[in-house]
Length: 76
Image 1 (cartoon, rainbow, N blue to C red):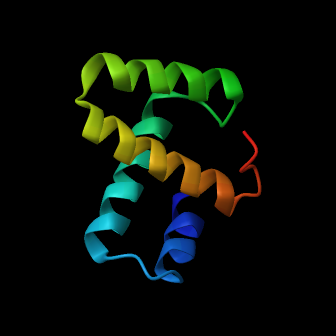
Image 2 (cartoon, rainbow, N blue to C red; image 1 turned 90 degrees about the vertical axis):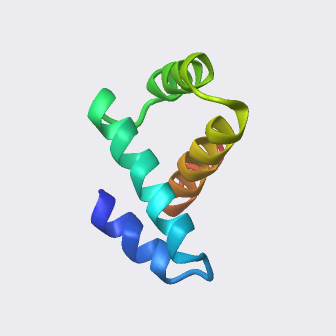
């Protein structure tokens, strides 16, 4: 899951810092939830809002959205 996403990110024009941040967000999500489901994604978003500043929340959500695009579930 993460290795494929990293390959996807490296094929884009993102900075190394952005790639690292996105990978961190996916690892963080994966450590808390089993699998990508709409229910888990909503729970992760609520958890982020309760525990982080808005700038961090937005970064992590951008990472999740990028991941969803990479697996063909961007409509979620």
